[in-house]
Image (cartoon, protein in one colour):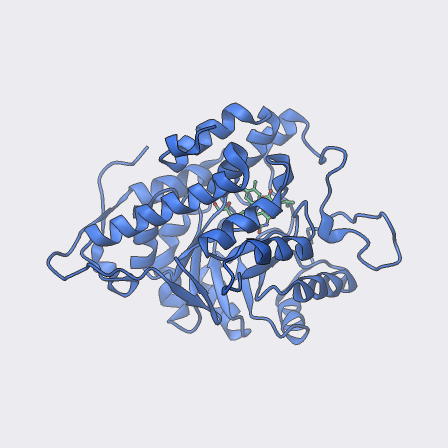
Length: 366
Ligand SMILES: Cc1cc2nc3c(=O)[nH]c(=O)nc-3n(C[C@H](O)[C@H](O)[C@H](O)COP(=O)(O)O)c2cc1C
Ligand SMILES: CC(C)CC(=O)C(=O)O
């Protein structure tokens, strides 16, 4: 595959769809139930227009952002997605190398098909000599707190710099494409490697991830007492819960509807962002994911108050099309689009991206 002949995330998706087993393509592309929210995430950006400023002298554009002490060369992070070995042989090793090469932050899924220690080592090996790559760990709190403690220990030992706790999954979302395709298990030879031998006394055993409706704010308090790492919550959608989260001392929020894969018909994250900004009142950084496919999407989210965005499916399409190089190209395309959009907005850097640049638009991109 000549990756240089691909110029958009959508083109990467088309190639991925051609290459992948349709069962895996459906797992990745799909969302829950009628996929209303999957579409809403894309349409949400399409319903906003950008209103640029001019003549502000924007020749030197700095896209870097610092999050919890770690610098990322751009405000586009890799959101956690499960099972990368379904789409490329090297799985999360390839993703980690791409993130390190692009000098951005990877949020490693707890449901990785490579253990987090190996993922971190791959990132370090691929990073430029003077550069420490940043990995965060996405955690589903396990109702068995000993399991959770063991997972945190693994992530911490691997050098992860933050825990991103996904709180939108008291039960698993219903992707009806998976039901139709009878996709319920990983193929032989693949597993959630972070859950292997969790207790050290269970050789060969890979636990299943438990989604637990028992979880409550008490678990967030418990977690904060059991880790020195910054704790971000991923999947808070109600602005009142955003306020509660901040009151519970979380370090940041990743405004996410899980790419439309949990509760269907929740709003597009970009539509919720202004209310979130108001609820949080600058007390913690706000990140956003869901439907980011273009540099213009990134600029809209940043202008409306996000400090950074995450991309989920685009990275998986990159991996499917061309492994590490494919994911790297997706990140570089998005970086170029972002820089180009910042320039066209007459902005000198991310600080110039202010809410007045965003207006409601007629029509939708797709
Ligand atoms: C195939 C796939 C697997 C995912 N796995 C996880 C996961 O393990 N943990 C998690 O918190 N979110 C997971 N997500 C959600 C992403 O982190 C992210 O919220 C979503 O993909 C963002 O939307 P986008 O795909 O439109 O960029 C997954 C999403 C996809 C598409
Ligand atoms: C292991 C799964 C729960 C991963 C996930 O969050 C998803 O597929 O959306």
